[in-house]
Length: 323
Ligand code: ATP
Image 1 (cartoon, rainbow, N blue to C red):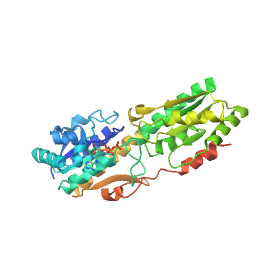
Image 2 (cartoon, helix red, strand yellow):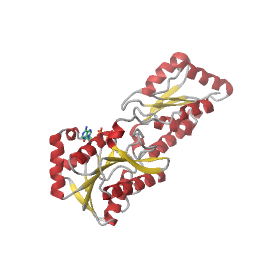
Image 3 (cartoon, rainbow, N blue to C red):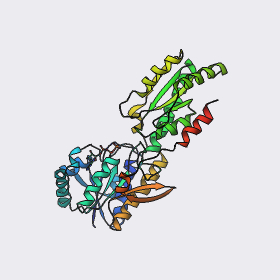
Image 4 (cartoon, protein in one colour):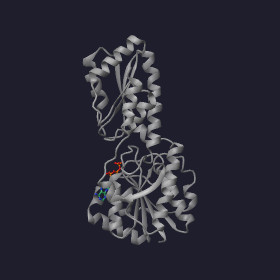
C-alpha cells in the first residue's frame, strides 16, 4: 500500500478537518502518500483528487466545516457509479481509503472494500447516531453550540418572563436534545423515544410561576430534519395555559464553528487509528470509541445495530427539573 485517499461525505460536522489532518499526517509519517478527494463520492467519480503535502494541513485542526467539501451523490449506490470511482482510484494509484461521514457514507465505504479497495469509515456527524461508538466526530461541538445558544435564550426568557421551546438538531437521534437539556437545566426535554405529557409540562410551568420562576426552557429534538417540532409543541402547550411562548429553531448554526478540544482529540485519535488499520491490511471497518477506547467493528455489524442514546439523561433531567 502506497497511497491513501480521504473523503468526507454526507452532512458536514465540526472536526472533520482534524480527522482529515490526522489521516493525512499519519499516512505521510508512515511513508505513504495521502490524497484528498473533494466532494465525497461525487468528487471520487469526477476525479477531483489532489495529493496532500504535510503543510497543506497546517491551520486546519481548529477549522469548522470540511476542507474537502461534502456532497450527497446517490448514484454511488449503483454499481455503475462505483466502477467509475474505481477507475479514478486506478488512475491516481490510490490503494485504500478513509471515508468520514454517516451511515450512508459507510455503505459507500463497504462497496469500495468489496471492490478490493480497503476502506475504513470514521463517524463524522453531529447527530451522534452511529452504533458502536459512544461519540461521533462533531457531536461535542454541536452540543456546546446548542448549550451556548440556550444559555443566551435563557437571558431573554428571564427578562420577559417567557417560555422558549428550543429545537435542536440530531434528527431521529435524541442525543443533542438529551445532553443539552441536562446541561442547561431545561424544564423539560421532548425527544423521540420518550413519551411526554404536555398537560404535565404545562402544569409544571404554571407551578414554577407560583414558586417565583416565571420563565421556562423546553428543549425539543427535531425528530426529522426540517421539522417544525418546536412550533408544533407550542401550539399544543397553549391549549393548556396562557403562556407567552416563543419557538426557536437553532438550525444549521449547530453544524458550524471551531471544534471543541474534545472533538479535535477524538478526530485525531480516530484518524490515526484508521491508518493503522489500513497498514494492517484491514478494510470494511468502522472506527468508534467505546469506554474511552478507540476500536473498530465490521461495517456490516453497524447496519444490523441501532444507536442507543443515553436515555438515563432523560430521567436525570426529570429528577433534577421537575419539582
Ligand atoms: P449524514 O448522517 O450526515 O446524513 P450520511 O453519510 O448518512 O451522513 P447520506 O446522504 O446518507 O449521508 O450518504 C452520503 C453519501 O454516501 C451518498 O450521497 C452516497 O454518495 C453514499 N451512499 C449512500 N448510500 C449508499 C449505498 N447504499 N451504497 C453506496 N454509496 C452510498
